[in-house]
Length: 287
Length: 340
Image (cartoon, rainbow over all chains, first blue to last red; front, side, top):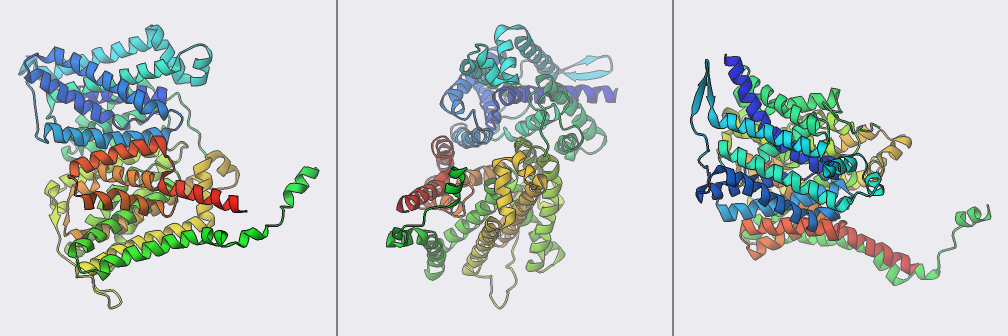
């Protein structure tokens, strides 16, 4: 029973990681922009939720507003910064580092570095047979699954999803068959940013919100993009759940204080022995 | 065929090449070194404690930027772990001096050795692949992990509150480091070592190989360059220098905390490099003076200074990707060509 409890816990945390990783994977895999400011969008999403919930509007509107607000911010950033850095990985990466400093320090000035929490929609816990489950954690797990499935269906079934996947395979080829690459790029960035906003709300409903909360989820998101195979959405999701379970089992049965190290070790092993990750389609040249 | 022959025989240099303007153009880099020497002497010659303190900080930052330039500027690899190795050096040397009781000058090479081994372990798996994205991801994660370790290993590092260290490096060749000015010269010494390493690398076969790797890894491998080895070597050298500078940090600040290892330190260093001009000798120093010197004198609140820094990074990346020194070098080269 202890084992099952630990596994469920791991799945919940892993789902959160996966939500972060999907956003990074979308933006990186399709546009080739490694957006380090993704974590800051997550932080802003969490703050949006905090202010909406404290204003008395409740959790569900907060989730929606945070996703829309971060999508809008993503659109803004794509239009004024990232559309100019599409040709160069490193340029986009550096620009995103500048954005981190701007967003994080403005947030620290505006929101103060105090820890904030908001009332989760489902407080308390419930009994399922011999298991005691936190209601909020189960809700988060369910929401993560909904988000992941929605994202997957969007990419697989809609016309624009098809265009996005085509661009992920070959940007020039996609442009040649009449895909408006500039518009699709914007859509991808908005989608990735909205995922960051959603992940922020889910994080905020479980953990404390501070202007500096971005680094840890971002680190996990990066580990997952490597583990899952750079640019693969299903890979990122699967790796997310695996990492969550590995961390949970590791901290339950090995050492809890080394919790954040397990993912890193997994990443090193993956780079050494499975460099393409779980579902990496993008072959990496070795010279 | 005749065209090839013509190319092989360049026209003789015109007499104007030896004009005073040509001489000026060759002197400019040396004038840069002279300016640096004057700048370095000013704090030591004056009597203001504030200027000495400011000079020490700028020298440390410039040394860090110069050492990061080796892996980012010359090898073209995006390492996000520089602050982690800086902090590693600070913690390692402080612990070796205070807990083990070693001489400071013994602790420095030991800390550098440790940093080099860790860098090789982290760098090798990531640098086996082209593109540089793996290294950015893995070093970011490593830096964050190192910060977490420093913050959580209470018995060794004193946890998130940091630890207070009180010692001065032992005198070296009769030169004492216990005064503020002595520590200033320690920081300047670190900067000069980093500059020396950079210049030696730049002029060596190794440095030219690194530039080839930066420009095109596949082509470089065709030329017989051990691409992975070169990249790992650049990363290891750069990280070892960061650890060396970290060793100076502990006696200068008398205080080490895990904040030293945070990704923000690396980000601002990258900003300094981009602004100053990546892959140039003067760039890191120019960038440091602009980034840290001027706002310090203007006394802007720290938070807004960092915001301005962020905006500058974005603007420079978009509009002037070669940085100040890069633009200056290009102008100088164009001027020289126009003289010939």
